[in-house]
Length: 196
Image: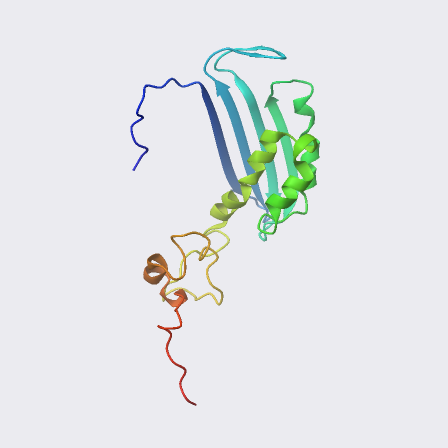
């Protein structure tokens, strides 16, 4: 399924592209390389001068290195194209402030506390906000099992992805079909306790 046909003629004016790649490293750590590019179709007059159409207004990179518990052990930011050269592209070292944060434990709150406003770059900080879900996708099947079948070694804990979205709610059909032993039972359908 794709989006519906637009109801009016349109002209493309701006493209923002975001790409995140996850790499398993030989030392057991993982790198998440995030990249954001903003491109206007036509020429854009900025306070800093004219930017030719098709040339990036922003071309920014953020790499975080995490361990298998999703704790950030290193961070690096680079700005290849910015609207205010000599100013925007000096903020990279500030992103070392991400070191020590865990992507699954209050990350977005701490990110905002450390790098919002004048403490960071709006676009790099926005890019960092999507790293937790990208890391979860990267770790699925490589670090964390995503299956739960009878022939596999049964995990003692509920698979991480259950109850994290509407499709994988433990009282829903997908869990009943693909993860039957983790189906949540309501009080009216739970089996009665047996006498000893």
